[in-house]
Length: 72
Image 1 (cartoon, rainbow, N blue to C red):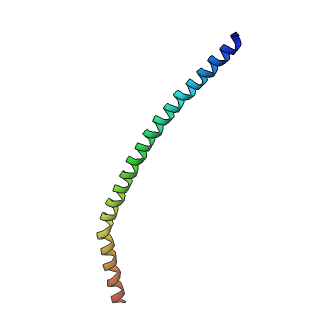
Image 2: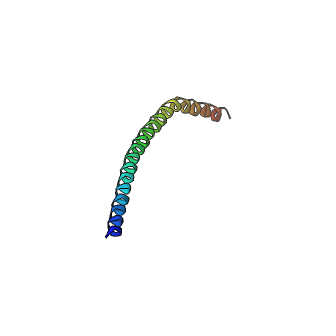
Image 3: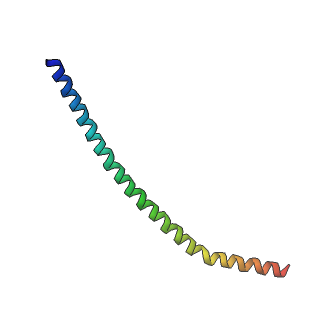
């Protein structure tokens, strides 16, 4: 009778450990998702800043290419 009780207790402890680990994984996944969201927003903002900064340069390059074609 002692061995079945020990087996049941060890099984319960094993499930408890798995439950604790599952909660920890869940918390870390949520934290990672927040970091990914934050990083993607920063990348999107940087891409918009780059696009705004490149627009005048693209206009200047287009104007210079137009003057070269006219002079040729």
